[in-house]
Length: 475
Image (cartoon, rainbow, N blue to C red; front, side):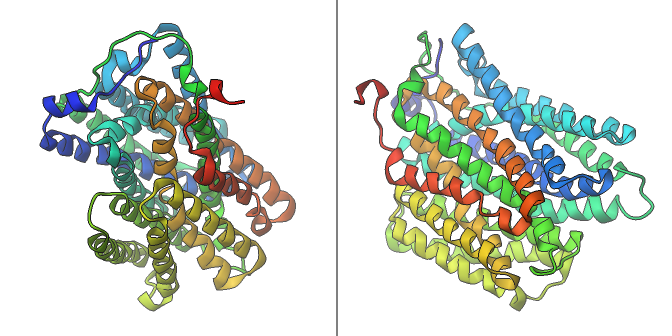
């Protein structure tokens, strides 16, 4: 099969650092957009659950349809790459990104007839189509960011891009919650009509982005056109274990975020109304944004003293931005969100202990999440409330670190490996479904024990699973 082999030495001669920075800036807009629209699922779950009177299991079919599309799309991509050659090598990263945006725009547009017919299955179909579009974006954009420059800074670049992805997650609950529950929603709105205009607007935005990127001159980093057959990437142990780690990470992160609005509404936790709970969801995803920006700095090339100062300032500014988003919907005082700053300080300390090592930081952060989840299950009130919100801070670097560790050293098999890792996003479809069934059986709070299994494997990957070994050499 034809697979891309990025050659950094040749790229540096062909493209200037200014071109790379310019292309990276364009890509951050994409990361922001798919973060925004993915997080809207957390608003759709309680909204459609109420309209169609769904159980938690049935409501989690929203995530099953959306993230299941990642698996289906990646399998199709993988089979095509084996039979006819790697599509990215044939059409290039830019055209792959444009195609993903167009498909995503179609998925958003399908929300209009779904709302008109008021059919839950139609909503799931629209989400599946949207997920297919984002699958193509993920396969093209993630490795492109990773190879767009110095390979030693790949984790730093991807963390920075994912930081803007998390910014989309951060503002989506507040904006989406306001538009769906209040501005377009309300007592006089019939069924799911409140969803029409927000998703129509997103469809238009995706099409505009597709047009802009089609006209934009992105650097071409495809150098090797050699044809190789088979699934050689799967012979690398650190990639196979990385696929499982991605499955576990996406499953854990998505299932926690999916149930937070309902969790915050429990009398023994906070007893919040849906609009207010949706605003506090911004703190969960905002923590991920803070952690990813800090991760980009931590894994960068600055001196250690300057790193810590820059990380502290970044954390403070990002926190104030997140607080502003929450304040717009809740009018909450700064003192009431002060407990979150304690966890931000813990996050900064954990980065120092991680010593700018991708695998060490991954293991440490996942271990902290396990402790936080145990606390969420065993306590109540403000302790459980702030512990579950702070998980976002430590989820932050997991995708970027696992992804870059898993493709490290694969060279010409990078594109194939990328499609396999995106395939593992299936975890976002299956784990929430399992936790939804568990929540129906034993309650929402106890169901948060399930993601502990996910983070235990991620911890193992950071400790040992990341090590590069060819499976044919293992005894």
